[in-house]
Length: 108
Image 1: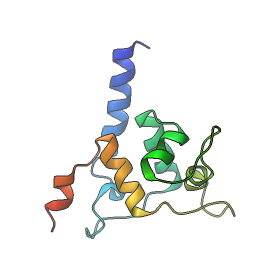
Image 2: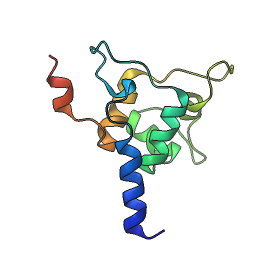
Image 3: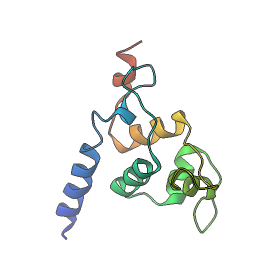
Image 4: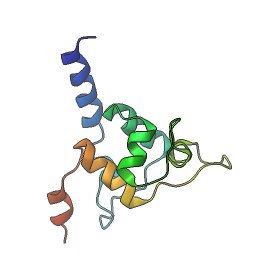
């Protein structure tokens, strides 16, 4: 895949998040928390490593990645699973360009 096609592939994957319930502002009646699969999909579509996500969201990490980020991607029902905080999820969506600050301000 060429760089241009790779960038297009990432852009179209990120585009698929728009208007999903997990990308709505928290005050929206349509908001639903992201699933672990959606967390993983966003990370992959943005081309981020666990370490990059950890640095962005302010959680701990080491050379191998981040236990916290891994737990956000762990399927529900597994003992290691942890829900991603809304603030971390929203920051990831903003950084990936899926949502904008004006999306949030529109409902205030």
